[in-house]
Image 1 (tube, rainbow, N blue to C red):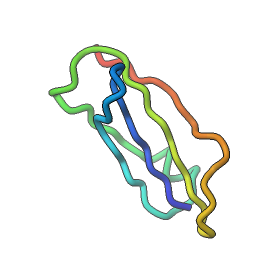
Image 2: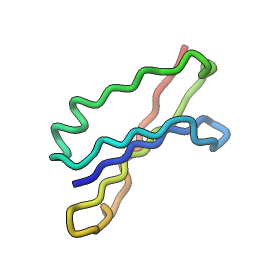
Image 3: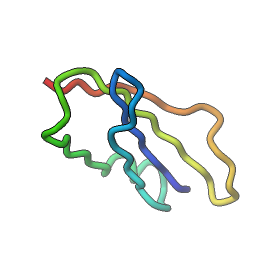
Length: 70
């Protein structure tokens, strides 16, 4: 499974992409780390997790959550 995490700011601009490579989803997401760059302004950022299996099928529903920078 290939996993990609994309983070965007409130204006819809992409600010970070993490490519977690090909590995089991559970382990990849539990061990993923994101160091927030100092240039990110305080505010709420949305992040989305996209996964593709080895056959090339994309997940049916994209996972999303938010990150608050203070």
